[in-house]
Image 1: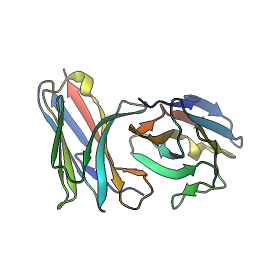
Image 2 (image 1 turned 45 degrees about the horizontal axis):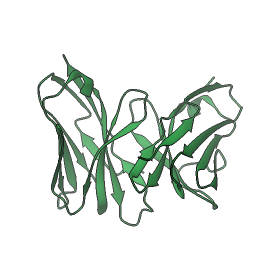
Image 3 (image 1 turned 45 degrees about the vertical axis):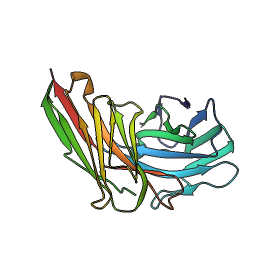
Image 4 (image 1 turned 90 degrees about the vertical axis):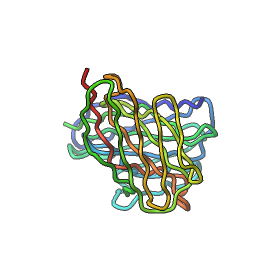
Length: 113
Length: 112
């Protein structure tokens, strides 16, 4: 089946710094990946759709300059949280669509202190 | 944007009992999927039901879909303590570029 690897699994950073989260499709090519954010006890909120070789499509209310998405290859998409603040602390999950359906990364727990 | 709404938000049952979770959505869909998430972990795909299907089974799971009411239900039979998790429905809607939109989720607690 399809495997999506997401790193890091957790990160703690200081307020004002930037954090990069990677999402790799290991055994398939993903032209499209999706990035979600999940606050405690809440559901997954779609942030953006990442398209290989083109600009990401952001959902309403998501700041594209705050959450930079790069999908430079068919197997890698990255989400960079720029100038992170405590309110950005959350669980971030990526997903890719393949012939097997949707596959999710294991998530990244971001804590901004 | 969130499309699905689920009820109940939380469900607590005894081991051996059945658990039923419901999901409602707003737009036309290609399919509806159910996922499980253990606390602080990633998602596990449970079952997918297409818009032209009405019922689907997988082991102890039974999913129904009523497109006229835009609703789905997930039934877990003979629950086990290990079924304790959050369960989410997600819709793959027409003309949405393949993105999955998740419901609010049901937090299931199965007591031994």
